[in-house]
Image 1: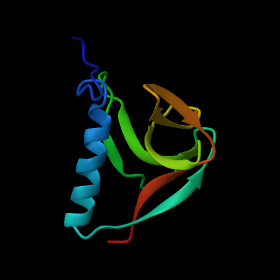
Image 2 (image 1 turned 90 degrees about the horizontal axis):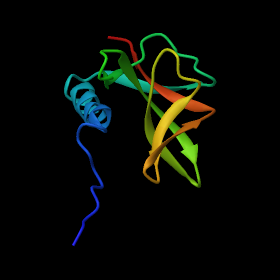
Image 3 (image 1 turned 180 degrees about the vertical axis):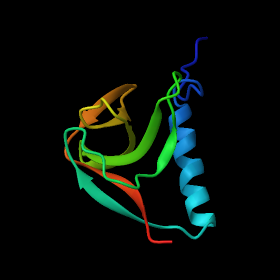
Image 4 (image 1 turned 90 degrees about the vertical axis):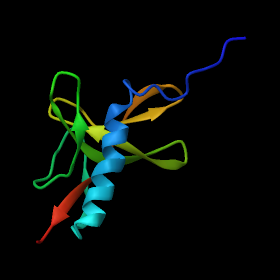
Amino acid sequence: MRTANFFNVERHRWLLGLGLALAMASTAQAETRWVRGSFGQMPPRALVGGHEANGQTLFICRGPYKGGVHPGKIRSGFNGCNIGYGGREVTVNPYDVLIEVGR
């Protein structure tokens, strides 16, 4: 019997980083907020969520898709927030980017 691999650690390493970044921000008492963006716009002070295999920094975003709001990743060169949905990456616009405020 063949089973489906619903969570491939290598492919979704950025999502693990997202959880870690949110936990670290919470632990460090960082104040965060969501800032609207579209078509690849990146606000200053965006929170890092992980890195691509080639070392490019990924930032935390979220975007609406099919009736829900989904966590995702954004980096320089993306045209929107890339979310995982139905086993593939979907680019959504507009989106929100998580930033750190104050300190």
